[in-house]
Amino acid sequence: MSTYNWLIRREFWENRAIWTIPAVLGGLMILVTLFGKVNRISIPLQLPSQTVGGGFLLAVGVTFFVVMAIYSTWYLLDCLYADRKDRSILFWKSMPISDTTTVISKLATALIVIPAVYFAAADVTSLLMAFILSVRASSYIGGALWHADVWLQLQVLWLYVIATSAVWYLPLAAYLLVVSAWAKRAVMLWSILPPIAAILVERWFFGSQLIANQLWDRTVGWLVLAFHTSPGAGWQTTVVDNEAIRTPASIWSFLDIAGFFSSLETWIGAAAGLALIAAAIQLRRRRSEM
Image 1: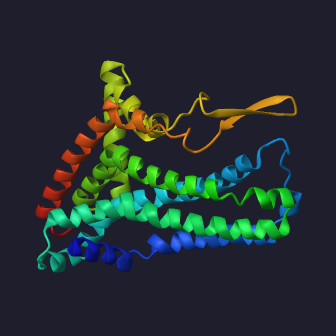
Image 2 (image 1 turned 180 degrees about the vertical axis):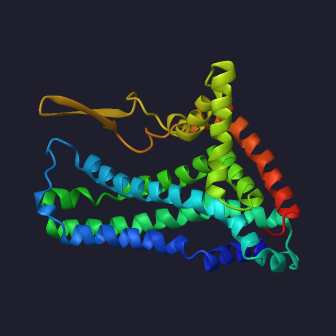
């Protein structure tokens, strides 16, 4: 375990963007809240204050999640490629650290550590923004942002998102590691060419779209499986301007834990991810230089 801790620290030393990007993003959001025209914010009074507060916290978290997804993709493509490009791989191979340990540490950094850093930054940013809004905006908006149970539910949501997205996106992350370990140049191009070529060949010769559909499902299917996306039990209805708005009564009613972990798609993807991780390890072992 100490070896993995040391390797993850190494990733922080060599990739300062892991913490600088969320820090800059949070700073920009705080500046907007501090100097923006928040007094013009208008929220229907019919909406429960917990719904308003939860919506605010969720919006901040989603913003960080989108930026995190983009950065994690870039990190996975670059992490093994950069070692070969600057030949630092020769130094690391001289250390008593196996290629398996190195690859897994980078995968864990992308799927667990980076999301944890971003969601911690989202929490700090949310607290500071809530404080500023409490001072600058109306008392209704300010009071809506301070519900201890909503904050607790949000922490559970972040942990759930990290766990389920790591499992669901394992094959995509492992594929990016394979490309990073194999490509001699233009890793971004090589990451998108094979899927596009496979989609076109299938379309031209078989007239079907199975590969394209599978890639699309793997990209957005996590939301469908991990969460209750359609209104049902545990949702509440609020009438605003003669229009019914349905929202989850709590975060707990929004999570679909059983549906996600009982899905065959989840575990087929995980198995494919493990196979691709093994391929990335073998490529790391055989390709030492550019």
